[in-house]
Length: 104
Image (cartoon, rainbow, N blue to C red):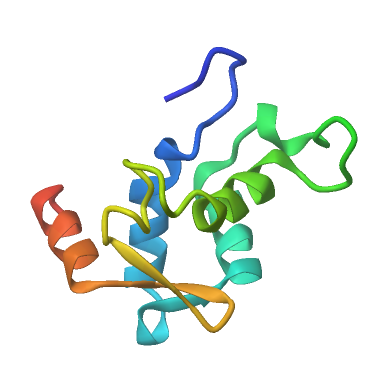
C-alpha cells in the first residue's frame, strides 16, 4: 500500500519478505539477497530513486529498517515472523504460519 509520499512502507514489505524467505534455501537470505529479490518482486517505481542525501535506494533503506526497528510493534522481527541471523533474515515457524493463513 503506498504511503503518503507515493512510495512503499516497511509494512508493505511484510508479505513479500516472508514469501521470499520461505522460498529460499534454509528459509534465510542475506540482507543483500533479500533487497535484490524484493526489488524484482515489489518493483517500487517511486522507490527506485536515490534517497535524498544517501547513495542507496529507498527499498534498501526499508529492508535495513526492518532490523533497526525490531523493537517497534508491527515490525516483522518484533512480531516474531523472522529473526535476524548471520547478517540476514530467517523466517520463523510463526512466519510460515502467517503465510499459511494468507493462503501461501
